[in-house]
Structures are given as structure tokens and as C-alpha cells.
Length: 175
Length: 443
Image 1: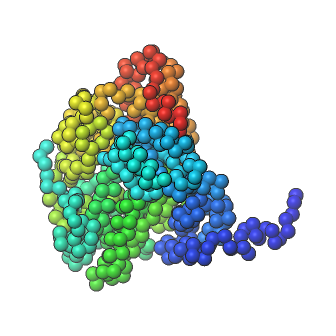
Image 2: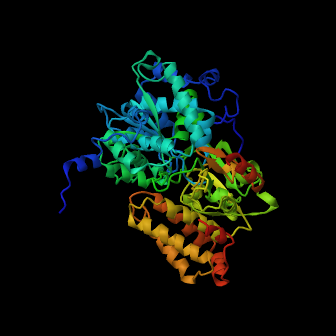
Image 3: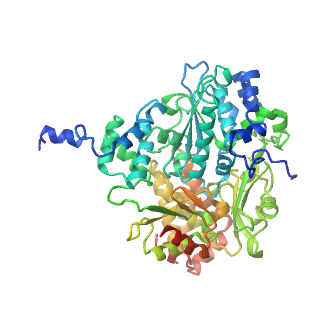
């Protein structure tokens, strides 16, 4: 059995090294605490705040969120990886996250073709980021924009009726 | 079915539809004022119960009855969780309500909180509804600025905080106990019931979970009264003692192969055919419909011959579908292969099963693999038997899973085999292949 020196253990838990998240980000996370009767409920808001700013949730951030919320890093990581929305540090998001809906209402009106076309134009597979780091392409389960099928989402804003002729416009806008 | 004056959608498209001033000019917060000055909480709850309002989120459980399950004289806190995780494929009615008329929804939240004595309401809103999130937050800020949220609302002994809580892209969080787990900062794994949320819900306290459209209905029931609400829709079937009726209007989403995909407000009980032909502008490209999914994909599949089915809480069940669901009708035309429809549906459930119960996790994955193999031209006749068997054995109804998601995953498969067996057999025998599969390979 390997016994680690005490200093290393505590720095692994992040106790004496709360330097990864900026003060600003930490304050924003703590500002959510009064909303809930316990600290764990701030897990999702914290993960959103971190990913919005850093484009992924690095392991160091997981440890610091856990410290702020009196949780173990495993609990934060468990929640984080359940929601496929969050990215680990090995797969950060590009500047813009572009989602293409693949659910039934969109698929019936060309959603699959749209996703295929965007993969080709951006030379990526769903989930990947363009070489210039500008666009991360993803498939989405139903976006709830079915009256405007096929639909895409840029960040968290829907864009309706993305017929093939409008794809080039979209590319110009995001490039 | 006669047209009705829209109520839930009456303010859509108005220039001031999102602001407090605009809402008040249209009679907004009249119901809240009435409730706080003339009615006690029990009376508000009784009105909702007597109106026959049933939940609009999919299960159709009587809303007032759900509220009565809260323990009497509980010291609190009691929580209201508002289900704005609208993730059922092909459903978008709640999004429209939140984006276009947020105060109507918030008034319903306030009335429900008053009736249930909840002091905090959490609106669990799916991440994908960014615009709805921002619109609602702006409306909430307006309410706080005007002392309509917080302490002593309208000078009365009524205190309420409303917080928005964003999801992170998980279908299962629309299941009420999955939602609660997610709110608490954990995986959205549904809980074993009992205890039901009314007894032990969010943060282990009594909790009511209600859908956005349901709460918008509450606003108008208090404003216009029970008789008005019961004058719309379908009364209980006298031959069915368990039928609670289908009162009120419903927001129907119409999408897929129609000329005019839209969301329309009509009395419960309108037929699919009316929805498609009259409100959806008919099937596109001058084609005929082959079928539709009647209420979100988990409700199963209806054939074109079944389009005269009334879309109330009982109708879809009469033609073998699971139920009314979210009343989201998605039409597919006669040139669409049923295998393509099935492939899309199975892919969704395999992706969104939360993985907690083995029959659902494995069942949805295997159904997806089997349909994929059919799409690749490798289907076998015995696959239909296997699919049917899996579909019938996963879910809360056969008693093998914790939540109803698995019933919803099995239903369309079961319906497809029962209603389109000939087409499926021909597809397999001729070794047909899916044109979409070349694309599917990319993702």
C-alpha cells in the first residue's frame, strides 16, 4: 500500500489550492446557494456556469465545485457525466455549439440529410469541433422546434426551417 | 368539432404579450387577486379538483386530486416543481406558452402555490429552451420588482419565490421523480414509488409536480370558473366508471408531413383527421397520410384509417395507442417506410434510456440494434417476434421497470408490428435497405 504524503492528499482534494476557478466564477456559483435548501442542488447551475465560460468542465473545476458544495468530486462527476451535455477537458467545445435535431418531426423533413451535409461541409463527425476551433457540431434529440423542421440550435437559440439553401448562409454567419 | 375562442393562446403574437403591463391590460393577475382576496387555499384547490382538469404533460392525472395527496397541516416547506422539461419528441406547446405569454404561466404557478401552500416553486426548464428561459426570467424579475413575488404578495400572508433551474439535455428528467433527483443535483434517475412526491418529493419534502400547460389552465379556471371550463371538451363516458372526462381546451402540436406544421388550441376530443386536414393544411405534396404518432412518439402509432379517433384522454387508447400523451401529432406520408419511422423512434429511446432498470436499458438498445439491422438489409422474420416480445415486457405496466419511459419505448414498436406487419415482412423478405443509413453511418 502506498501512503501519500499529507500535503499531496489535501491538494488532491483541493483544500489548499482553490486557484483554478476565478473569484468571479466562484462567487457566481455561491450566489445560487440561497435558492435551495441544500448545497448539492447547485451542482447543475455550477456545471453550467463553468462550461459556459471554459467550454468544458476540467477535472480541477469538478474538485473545486465539490469543495464549494461540500460534496465529493465523485458526486459532481457522477452528475456531470450523466448529462451528456457537459464536456470533459479532453473534449472542449468550440466557440459555437451547433446542434442539429435528429428526432422524428425533423427527420421527416430532412433533418438527417441536414446533419449529413453539415458534417461534410465542416469535415467533422457529430460531437467533433472544426479544426479552427470555431464550431462544434452535435446531433440533438428533439429540440422542441417541430413547427420549424428541420431545426437547428446555435448555443441555446433555435433556428427554424434550415432547408439546404439556408445552410450556406448559416455557415457564413458562424465562420 | 366547433372552433373555440382560444384562451391559452389568446395573447400570442400581441406586441406586449410578454410584459407585465401588457398582461395586466388583458386582465392578467385578476385570478390571483380574486384568489388572494376572496378564496382560501382549500377553495382554490377544490375549484381545480371540481373543474376536472387533468395533467397536460402526458399521464392525464387529475390535477386537483394530485394536490389533495399532500399531507394535511404539514409544517412545511412544501415545494412546487414545474415541469418545463418538455422533451417528448414532436412536442413544443409549452415552449410557445413560455416564450410568448410567460405571465399567464407564472400566474398559474402562483395560484397552484397558493392552493398547495408551497413557498418555493422551481421551474425545471430544459436547456434547449434558451429563449423561454430568458423570457421567463425577465417576467420573474418584473414580478419581484412589483412586489408580486417574494414576501406578502398583494399585502396578504402569501409568500412565494420562483426559481428557474436549467436542465442539461436528458429526456428522463421529464419524469417527475427523475426531475426531482436532477433538481437535487444528481443523476436524473426516477425514484421507486411510493413514497409519491406529494408525501416525499424534492429535498424529501412534500412536493407537487405540474406541467406548464396544466398550470396555465389553472389561471383560467380560477378566472372564469368551473362551469366555463366544463363547457369545453368531453364529459366522462357514462359506461366507464373510471373515466374522469376530458374537459377544457388542449394545445395540439401538428408536425411532420403536413403543409402547415403548427400549434393550435382546440377542445379536447377533436379528431386527428380534423387536426391534419383543417389545421395542419393537409398532407404535404398532395400525398396521402400513412399514419401518425398521436401524442409524442411514446404513445405509439396510428394508421390513416384510425384518423377519426377523437383526441381526448380516452380516444387513442381505443385504437391500441398508449394514450393522449402530449397530443403532439406527427404525420408521415404514404411514401415513408414504417421501418424508417421505427428506426428513428428506437434510436431515440436507446439514446435516452437512463440506464437504471435493466429491461429498459437493454431492451431499448436491442430493439434499436434489431431495427438497424433491418435497415441494413439484414432483417430476419423472427426479428418481429423478438421485437414484439421485448416491447411487451419492458415497462411499468408489465412491472419490470421503475418508470413509464420504457412503456413508451415499447409502445410504438408493438403498434408497428400489430398495424404494419405486412409492410415489415415485405421489407425483410425483399432485403430492402434504408436510404438514410448512409447518413446514419456518419453519426
